[in-house]
Amino acid sequence: MAIARLALGAGLTLTPRLITAPWLGKGAFGPAATVLARSMGARDAAIGAGQLASLGRGGTRGWLTAGLAADVTDLAATVASREELPPTAVPLIVGAAGAGIVLGLYALAGAQN
Image 1 (cartoon, rainbow, N blue to C red):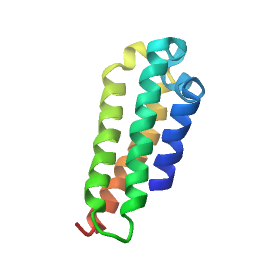
Image 2: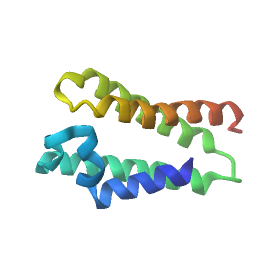
Image 3: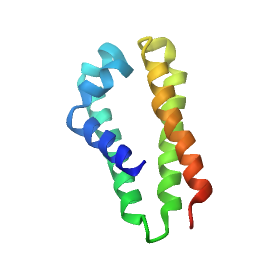
Image 4: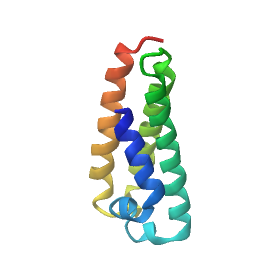
């Protein structure tokens, strides 16, 4: 899970338009969307890196909670703006963020601190 979040974050940071086009449609090609996608990518990469660094050392709960909060926020923001987004947006984010939420809750249930 940590590696997937780190990879997605790096992808968003390095190629924001490629990844955000199905989510944001034509809006993904504006400079504001690029800035936000890169900052979201950096957020996810940092959370993934933190999760990786904490493995075997305890303290994963905080990183898992941060990832869960990010996924819930992404899902809520997408659903709230669904009328302005392309038809691919909600299924894409329900799948991606939904998987992150389910896996995050599962991991939190077994996390040690």
